[in-house]
Image (tube, rainbow, N blue to C red; front, side):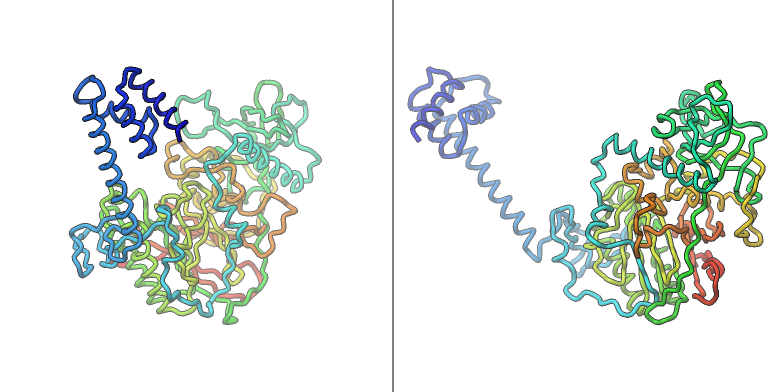
Length: 607
């Protein structure tokens, strides 16, 4: 203790000066010991105390004022702690969860604000997991119990390892890992092309050769030949090879005037190209600094879905599904009128499955961006979605609701694509399944794939179509009557199937980068089937090695339903445009692809 006092004396004399009075020095030591301060801390407090008085010598009155100031600070700190504890534990707290109740909410819970239109029970804001609350302890005591379902639903694996993989630490990314993922994708398609066309080896597009070779690489944009962001064109096409097949070199592509498309869709008339697309080309590098392509080789198609029969709990394999995509309220307000109309339709039709695709609580909504709301996002989600969906489920026993988030969802703490499912703390109802984005699942054995990112709009904006006549075209499966092989929307969906990815574009278009934050390192979660040929997919439909029966890609483009090979591609558009899709499956009534027994109607909301 004496040694500590001596150190304090030395420290104080160094700060206040050696001529400091002994009485003042002793008082300073007592203050430091009482409040656990160093000599330097006390000196700074004294300086702050005399800031408005100007320079001067330390006096006993100054020390008394410093002591009083320290006491006042301690009292304020203790009062703040008691207030915080009361807010967390008190049932009547008006600031529970950190959001105060505004004066326009009366004691009966009726919200007088016309902009939100939510019931009064939202007046007390829910605790949020990001505030440190254990939401699992705050769920309703009586949780709904799921009865027998009308469909056999098999979703992505929900074990701890799979969930941890989807909820990865997205801000921890190494450049080396990123480049390896991009390289592996080229190498993977290289092996597929070799097996599909019976090739012994692939060539290097940067190596000068006299004979034609087949090369596989990624389409990129030649930034040096363009000034500013421009759309891909034939003059700016560059082929990027992998490190294994071409040392990662980038070589300009030039197409022969007589270039042809081998094993493409009959009547397609050419091949769509876009940044990030993996392509196989036949030609040679004659030494002019570019690769001259004489043939475009179509990529191997995905295997068609298996026709295995999966019985539901009611032994009936037919089902109906409503598909709607957000936003679920217009920009003018937060009334969620389109959602209310949809719920009315659901209660009337009672489909077996309702698939809702985010955003649910849109972070880009004007009212949310400026904070013009009376409730937390968790409150809004519970009142506008969970409660209404539970009403539907109560009125339609055996039905199932599937929710796929969006990168624009303010509820999600995963700000990149691919995106994990929403936290179960927001909805702990077994009849409401939370799925990742993108997701693959099965309903009575029918493979369904869905993503909330508007990849069709991105592809449409970036695609360059290279015209080329067909060589050995694929004649099956036959397109339905009225759908031409050159159908633009069908071919955009075909890109996803050929590239085996929910988002094959790389990099994201500069002017659309705010819509999707692409995580390249975890691109394996975007693949429609695993790249590792030895990986056992087991019963997890997200690891299936076949094309989906149904591909749901919501887009701001006009709604449609198209047949793409053996897949039914659906764009329900946006619910704020008053459109949604109704899918009806006739069941396992006959052999053949499921597309023959699927019927899709794009329906408009009334009013």
